[in-house]
Amino acid sequence: HTLHLFIMLPLMGGFCTWLLVLLLAASIQGERTGSEATGRQLMQVKVLQVAPETQAQHFLHQLRLESWDADVGDVANGTVAQSQPLEWRMVRRFPPLVSPGGRVNPKCGNVGIRFPQLISRNQSTMDAFYRYACGSAADFFITDPTLAMTGTMASLEQGCMNLQPWPDMIRASNRTHGEYLYRSCGERSGEHCSAQNFTAAKVTPITVDEDVLAVSSLRSLPQMDYQHALLDFLAPAWIASNGFRKELLNGSVKMLAVTPWQIEMLKALGMPEDAILQVDIGEYKADSPKLVLCSKRSLHLFRPGGPEGRRLPELPFRDSRSYSDFWHRFFNWQVRDEITHAITTFAGLKEPSASGDIVFLQRCTDRRPIANEQEALSLTRTALTAANRSELLTSVCGSREDFLEQIREMRTARLVIGAHGGALANLLFAPKNAGVLEFVGTAAAHAGLAGVWPPYKSYWYGGAGAAFKFYRVVLYDADAEGNWALELPDYELALQEWLATEKPLQHTV
Image (tube, rainbow, N blue to C red):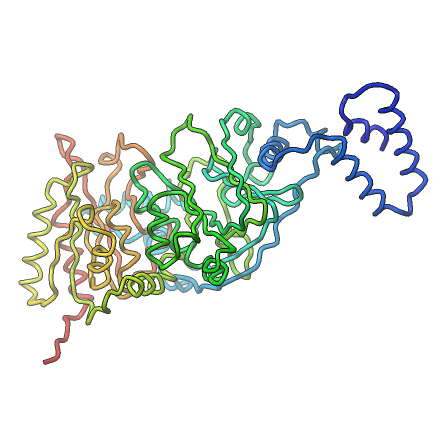
C-alpha cells in the first residue's frame, strides 16, 4: 500500500511528501475493517494529488494499457484498473432471415446462405463459383442469416468513443467501464495490438455537455457516403432512436451523425435538426486526425446482438476480411417497411396503388461502366414483350435523381436489375416481394480497383440478401481492352427464371 501511494503521488520530494505517505499507510494498516472508507480516502488522495486526466486522455491511455505491448505492471500495480464490461439490454428481437435448413444447395451449402445463387450456362463457371463459396471464401463472412438477432443498448456515463475505426476498431469507455463496439484489440482478438497504433495517431478530442445516442456502425468511405449511410447507418439509427423518441424531441438526447448523408437521412425520417449532433469526420485519409467524442453526461450505445442479446461472433483486430462482419446490415431488411413508411409519410408522398414496375438501374457514369448495358436493357424489353407481360420497364439513373425520387421509383418495383454499386443500396426501399437481378464481377474484372473488391461481390453481403424471395447474380467480365461486359446469355437465362417464377400481374377493370 505504501508503495502504491508513493507511485500515485507526484514527485514533489521533501519531508512532507514522505510524512503524508507514512501517515496514510499507517491509517490503512490500522483500519482493515473499514475498507470502504479507506477506499474513499484513497480516491480523494488521488484526485487531490494527481493532476486529473481529461476524458479523452484517459480514453487513449486505457487503449495503450490494454494493447499487448503495454507494460503489464501498469495494470498489475493498480495504477489503472482494467475496464469492466458494459451492461447491454435488449430493445428489440428479430427472427432469422432464413429458416435453419430452409435452403440447401447440394453443390455448396454456403450458396443461398452467405452467397447468392449465380446463373451461368457454363458449367466450369459454376464449378469455379462453388469452389470459391465453399472453398477459399468459405469463412469470408461470419454472418449467418439463419440466426435470430436482437438490437441491444448500453449506457456509459461520462464516456468517450472513437468515431473512425482506427485501426479497424471502435471502442467506448469511461474510467471504470469499456468495451469494443466493432472488432477488438486485446487477448480476445487473437492478434497482436501495438500501443503505437493508438499513440502515433493524431487525435482531436471533441467534448459535449449532452447525452448522445450513437450506433456502432459509423462507417463512411470516400465517394460512397450515400450508399454507406443506407447500408450501415439508417436501419440501426432507426431502431436505436425508437427508444428515445421523447428525449430526441425535447432535446435532452442528441443522435450522433458523422457524414452529410447520415444527417440528411435522419432529417428525412422526421428527426428535428436540433436533435442531431453533427460531427463531420470528413473523408478518410491515413494521416488525417482521428476524432474522439466524449460526453460529460452519457453515451447511449447501440449494436446488433444475437439471440437473447448475446454478443455476436466478430472478426479479430485487423483481420484481412475487413468488410465481412456485416451483422448490422441484416437489420435493413427487417425494418425497411417501417423506414420507408416513416420517410414517405414525413415527405407527404402518396402510397403506390400497386407494385408492378421493373426497375433497371443504369450506371450513367464513367466509373466502372458496363459496355453492353444498353444491350441488356433492350434484351429485357424484348423478353417482357415476348412473354406478354404488362410490367412497366423503367430505366433509372440514380445519380441524377434526388433522394425522394429514388424512393418513389424503388417502392413500386417488382424486379430490380442493376450492377453492383451505390444505386443498388436503394433496395432498402423495395417491397418485400421484389426480386433482384444483380450484375457482379469476376476476379479479372475487379483487379486493380481501389477498396475491397473480391470476386462475386454483391449486395447479398453474407446473407442479408436472403430476405428477398428471388435473388440471382450474373457475371460481367473484362474483355480484351479491359472493358466490363455482361454475359448476356446468362442474363437472359436469369430473367427467364424470374418470369417463370413470378405470375403476370392481374389487372382489374
